[in-house]
Amino acid sequence: DTAVSQTPKYLVTQMGNDKSIKCEQNLGHDTMYWYKQDSKKFLKIMFSYNNKELIINETVPNRFSPKSPDKAHLNLHINSLELGDSAVYFCASSQGASSNQPQHFGDGTRLSIL
Amino acid sequence: QKEVEQNSGPLSVPEGAIASLNCTYSDRGSQSFFWYRQYSGKSPELIMFIYSNGDKEDGRFTAQLNKASQYVSLLIRDSQPSDSATYLCAVNVLGTYKYIFGTGTRLKVLA
Image (cartoon, rainbow over all chains, first blue to last red):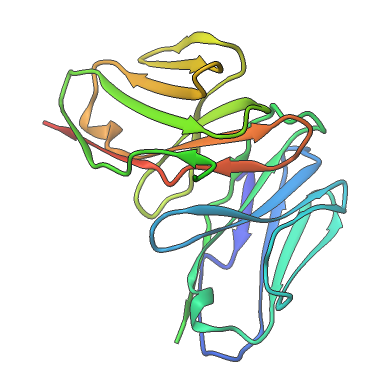
């Protein structure tokens, strides 16, 4: 019973391509997040949705576009991939509008740009 | 100044010792504090969270929070080689959904 699942686990593609990563959670949470973890292991927030509404949009190139069709899903589409996009992307979820709830992470998607 | 700071390590401790991991944060509005463990190539998993000043214990783990000094720490008693991982401190600021992570401290427990 995977709580937060991401697909694909690995993504190897060429510069300039467009790709998507999907995320689903079965915890009943109403808030979902996308993080980027670079080679130095720094985990940086990119986007967050609460009940399908965008609530956090960090300084991220507009080549990155999140989409939340419902509160259990948050997908990430990336256009015109660049070498610097190589990283591990983690999806996470948490419950409620309160800020004191811990986050639960998916297994990550390792994106490698050739 | 970084918003959440951790010593990157590695912090090496012998098996059975107490490992002490520290984290400082800059925003006084921070109200929730989390410790995550991340094994190499894996996702972060929650170890503990703490909201109030003082100590909170869970098994071999103790989180300590001092809001006046703006630091939070994690103690691991009777350290085991399986505790070897990177420990991430995360802070949430009151009234926001944003969780800010430190860069993590790599812990090595030597058998």
